[in-house]
Image 1 (cartoon, helix red, strand yellow):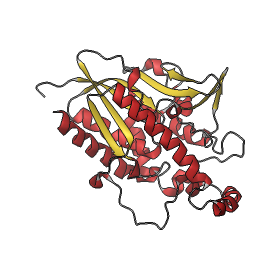
Image 2 (cartoon, one colour):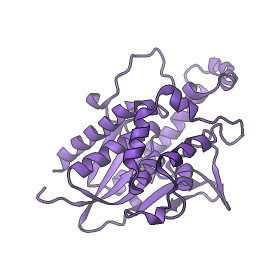
Image 3 (cartoon, helix red, strand yellow):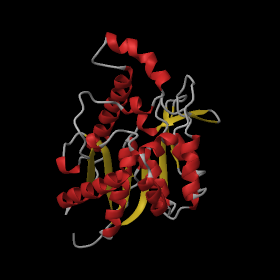
Length: 291
């Protein structure tokens, strides 16, 4: 490229793989790009919002310090019909790390995407309390309890728009960089190497208390190929994949950064160091195709 361009940055949903967004942002800045807008969904909203608040270095430091036990300790389990993780402990820690933030105070415009289940539509947070917006955007249905906001029942933005490229109001002097962290592309050098397992263990199983796991054992014996956890994970993933494909097809970004879904499971935040590196490498791979 003969000159550096401004960037509209779109960060997709995908649980712990969203830590890779940090690597993408750092590489953009190293290359001299100016990020003029960030639109994020779910974990993409978390990283994007904290970046726009100017607190990404502090957040990254905390993420890199997480262990398996540390991640588990952040999950405040509850037993309700709407979800089994409250999320108060997790986002209380976010606030502790970065402080209270108001979206309208950011120098870089930011949008977090959530889904209003009651009215069957997207909700776009462009102002107000950052952590309220992020807590709504990451509320995976059936896992996190939803946020009730006046007449709205808010859950994960990925239900309707996991990669919200359509929300970009593109400037003529800027490019769109979209980061898909649920890519089907298998790029061996990007994957986090793990020992082969006899059966894929879904992330739900690794975080659930034993009392909940027991409830599913009898049903799993009846249908060996699909446990409750596999059905929950796969159903949500299939829907997100299709929506993302349609979004990329109709709103083609200038640079599409792809992080494979196989990189890690949804709650494996203790792999943050590897995930930041993976995001950086994925961006460099995508940039080569663009230049």
